[in-house]
Amino acid sequence: MRFIAGVDRSQRQLLPESLEDYVTKGAPVRFLDGFVESLDLAELGFVRSKPATTGRPSYSPADLLKLYLWGYLNRVCSSRKLERECQRNLEVIWLMRKLAPDFKTIADFRRDNAKAFKGVFRTFNLLCREMDLFGAELVAIDGTKLKAVNSQKRNHSRQELEAMLLRIDKRLEEFLSQLAATDEAEEGSAPLTVAIEDIQSKLEQLRERRQRAQKQLQSLEESGSKEYSQTDPDSRRMKKVGIGYNAQIAVDSKHHLIVEQNVVQEANDLNQLAPMSAAAKEALGGEALKVVADMGYYDHEQIARCEQDGIEVYVPRPKKGSSEANGRFGKKDFAYTPDTNSYRCPQGATLLAATRFNKRGQIHQRYENPAACTKCPLKEKCTTGPHRTITRWHLESLLDTMHQRVAANPQIIRQRKELPEHVFGTTMFWNNQRALFMRGLEKVRGEFSLTSLAYNMKRVLTILGVEKLLKHFAMKIGEIATGSASCSAHRFASTFLNPLIAFFYTVDRNGVKFHCLNPH
Image (cartoon, rainbow, N blue to C red; front, top):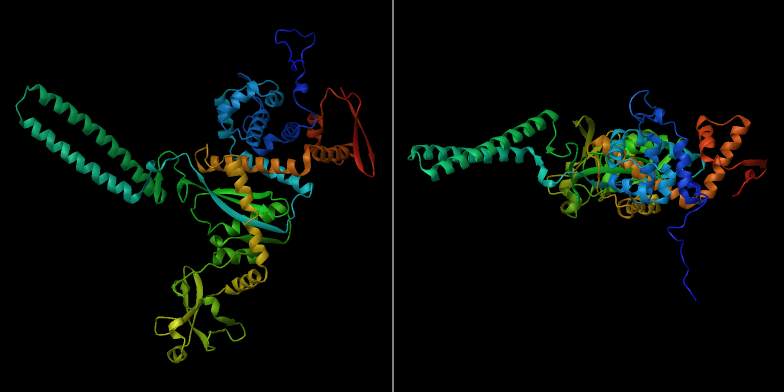
């Protein structure tokens, strides 16, 4: 008996292998190739989408986009690693048609086309809508922190920069005094000459450090920010990652697909509920939408904007204020009566409307009943002051509606944990995307768009499989035959099908069927 033997490496072949033999007919990379070829890259904003008439020919942005999408789908995000894959990975060799750009060209493509990646993400989501992969009923919003290309040592606040300048000035005074003392000593001594040269060198270094710190402080004052990052000026201090960005996603509940995504500089999520909800509603194209988020998104104005836009919001109310924190009655323990515009306390007394005031540009009403509070047996459990007061926002009726909705649907709050956490677990840990490659807010947004697009692609390929995706595009090609197809479908039909293989199709009640004339 013998082992299975491989092919002799020195054996010559009469006919060389075709690139088509490198990839099976049902490989996901074939769908990736066809999807990119169906895009109008000039319309999406990709630079150099049309070749120049002069100069050395450049790489097509379609080829480089295919390379990046393959890389993010296969956990290869580094430009240097992608360069190596172009020379040794058979799928990439097939996808790139033996093109092997260097790492600088690959990295420059991601840097120069950061804004265009968002359009590719939305185009793929339109495809998902056509295949009815979005439920468009419930969307969960959440955020995570991404580590930026900036160490904590190279991030300074205003106070730190001012303290740094004081330390530098103090050291400068010390060296200047030492230099003055050395000048008074006897001239011509070798040790003294060495000491003078050493002090002057340190003085020059301190002056350079002071100049840099002064420029950073000036830049901080001009921008109005509270901190300055030397490597990535747009990055901010974040919990858990040190210096980074806040990535936001909206996840549909049907198949856990990302509906909308964005990257912001704010360290918390207070101002992200309304813009993310509106963007998700627009992306899904529906008139009504339910949105659930954790209590970190609880903000009066954000919730009111969502309710006014016809979006049902489910956000648990956090325990705010010293009353609940110290075990006393909170505002939720007081029942509001709209007919009489009053509150009823746990003891049964009525708190009537008193004064109106303006707080941060919003109108508030104060409610109180000093006479009832002085005789109340539960006063110690209610307040430590002379009497209890309740303040009400002029749009708080919208919050009351949401609170009742949350209390009546606790299963939606529990479901929230299953949606964005699954996405973050996949993208951050399985794809190893906990740290960023790009610098600058716009470029980071483009990088995160690639990450989100790769997640959605991998998810759709897992849910449907390549065969069903091909059938969907077969229907598109059927529309081409009837003259009702879009331009993107025409482009896909002309590039997705292998030109070396002849096809014909038949249309029946089950849809379009493709038949291969030359299966070999």
